[in-house]
Image (cartoon, helix red, strand yellow):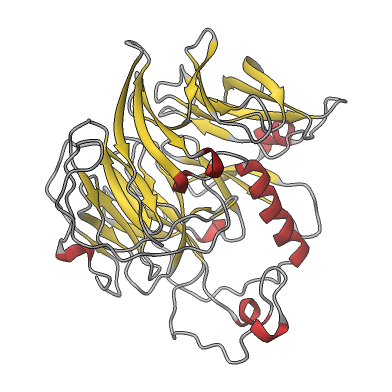
Length: 433
């Protein structure tokens, strides 16, 4: 993907408007509801555990290796840097336990590499992203945030590709480009307002009386990392917006909620032209409640959950998972059920197949469902995580006691939709907190 036509926006101080506490609490509640039993968006306080060198065999027989490269030290630079690590054909996905990131190969018997720097994990904000390390769609790269708040991109072996430096304190990995050519992350710069008027109920004695700040600290907003042209840009027009998904190679689906209004304005924002288009989306999103959506590599189709009440309006009584041409809601209904019993559709790269999760009883075990383009079927217990290619995908299994958070996954395996073969990839180690 080519860099945006606009020049990089210079860092400047942007005065943040006061955000009503009720609006913040509503967003947090909505994120928790939508997360249900699958979204990696629990609002836990990130924990970290220092890794130690390991040279042994894991319970699944895969070789374990520690990435002790100097490039993974906590202090890389205060400035943005790009690196050129050795290329690799390995594909991997992130498995995080208590701040320890394991880069897990999609091939059984291949390396499992614990990343040396403790990372952020276990949090999320609807429209801003997740604190969890997040794999690119082609599984060759992972975007992560270190314990110190530094945004990094590493390859599938944990070698640094890019560091945003310590001047920018990242809080969320927002979204990867569909061709894996770049990634967006979010920065929230502390302000006096944030310090003295904290979000949510906080005892008076816990509000800081003399907060300190770093001079010249990076400005808040979404930052676009162009890995092809080795550039980083502040997407200034998106300040105060929510970035929901990457539609195709050029467009982001965003929303803006005016203060005091319960309705959102939806639009696409084009990174090449810096133009926004809201006209095609008003009717589409007017009657939706918290849709979960997924795009493939082409941006022509989308799989999404549509929520309705008994009168057919937006509500939390029933849900349908639909595969349709974007941005239409008219297409193939893949599944229908009670609210939160089916959710989180993931569209295949070629936009023909869908995997999603569901369960039979409230708070019961999660199951993976697969739609092959003609019909949907229930496969096995576990939650689908990501497509490896158009024929195989990754599934995570859980201890039923912790079935609502990927950080409590107990093992991962891949499933081939053609051969119907299941191959175990990784059993997560026990990490002491």
